[in-house]
Length: 205
Image: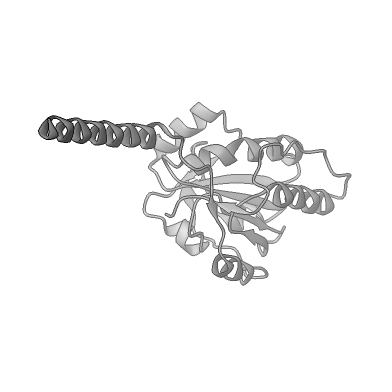
């Protein structure tokens, strides 16, 4: 009888372990990672620096660079990691910003994948702006983007206006305010429902 009880307990524990593993496998991944003080500090040092002139081929078949695309108007750079759920979660907000300010600013995605991967992403998400293919992360490193969902605003002329180590509802509104001010017109209302309340970053490159 004690042996039977021992077998039953072992079987119950094994089933519980399987349940925990199954839950972990099915549980949706986090939509963002916390932004640390060090990340905020490092990003803050980028303001005022010249944007990189390094270029990469994009989904529109042309070469783009942060500095070149900002020569006549501001540029918004969104950093994307292939397969990152954080990038997936952030994407709709930048499409909304593009819809609001795409005629006033150049928007560029920068992805750590080859051109086919970038085109697949653009097709699946309906991305309306070019995505640079940067598989060796040369442009990403030059921009000092440690993770996906980093966002850089480059002023007309090529100097970095602001650099955020992630996104949030407040940050998205701030970016919209800055773009409206740079364009010289009224701010466009932006739907940020569901965005993080605090600044949230993506997966590490």
